[in-house]
Image (cartoon, one colour):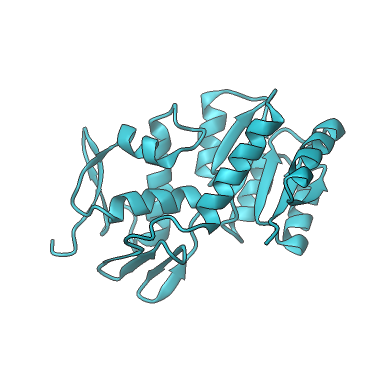
Length: 229
């Protein structure tokens, strides 16, 4: 099945270049020039992945991502010339999965898109596809998470992090170990794990300030609390 990719940038030559490369790989490509167009196109076209520039007129990419995240966990790659740490942390807090800085190589972007689509929609762990801890069920074969039978929508990065933890309940993972498992463009920032954990807890915990599932091991990292504790 051909995946649908939404590319959002206010520079036409960037749109044309990315579209040419993705179309040659068999993807269906749709374009938008600003955040407002991105939001409209997202709602009507239902893309499988969004590449979203940050600095745009009308509505910037951060605001567009914030609004999209209220409705969907579609994979998002931020594309930007801004490289400040706080910009990257802000992108993480909004639920971004990748962050690529300009100038970039189109082949690198295509490879990131292909990998993120595989993470989002492919089989991640067929050898042990289902884990259960309390009311929480994680199914890597169908890429779904439920709590007490209610489905929880996670981004691909959040899902990868949850799989790493739930597959080894009780095992403490350092931030560096979790970064290695995430395989994303935020890997230079150990704080990225803290932001992902915060986002993940907000979705799976009843009270994220008193987590039932993901525990902080101070000075070390995080672990999934075993079902028998």
